[in-house]
Length: 362
Image (cartoon, rainbow, N blue to C red):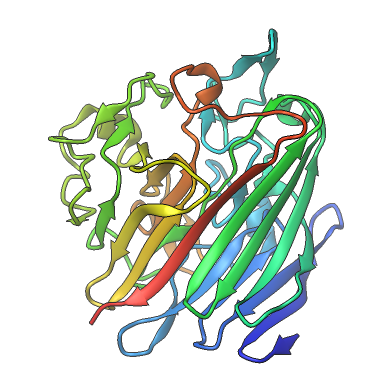
């Protein structure tokens, strides 16, 4: 399908071990920027971005086959996937309206990224949306039934992937429920602006528009404190190379084996996106500005990647091969009364956006 400056391609990618058909979609704008994703997990498999010489390269980590996405060995990397029902960690259970809910545990005593069979392991239903002269979009939808991984309520989820000619890739999350529940949706793409398989992101310059973060305990569950980043290795308010402090003698970095924390995004939370992060790779000139409506953002340096997974390029991924930005509500919010609420009630609509704006600096 192609009209004017944009194009959308749709093709069968393969079948799951259970026989479900998985499709691949390609969104392309007039400048040649291209986003590929699967209906399996909504996984973004490729994002072609030019450098300052006009050379295009894929800047996200990912697998080359459906079998790898379906059967990746633990710990799961969640390459490019849509995450739900609850992105990040909940400490095993929570109480809601006087009832306790025990969740699917897949990280010791934690429910991580929605449990053993999260949204990253589901086949989503896709629909190409009507095209205008501003952008191309595909809608992905999923029904998570009452009790799925221990969560209450039938949750109807819709996620729209859009690409425009301003080189912005937008993810728009929507959800509704028929019973009071908790929801925290995000995407788990790993970015490497030097190109997938081209080495570490430690030489990338990172700026976070975040003055606070949520420290974690030995189980990677927030302590409940909202701590200032000032005078710690968590301070990226000024652009800093990612590798500058990642090996600092700082307890939080020891616990996560690098960066794997939720930062509190500065500014008033509203329906309008606000700046969350800026990532620059000087050698290629590639730049990412990330904006979101969400109150927090997990920043993860791929600490569980230990060379046991081969990616799209055939090269083994190790820690710092990519950096994941996961705009979100805070981890374990259902058990942390001082954190922003993730409760969704019948009649309400969960409605959040994240925008990835790509450009080059000379």
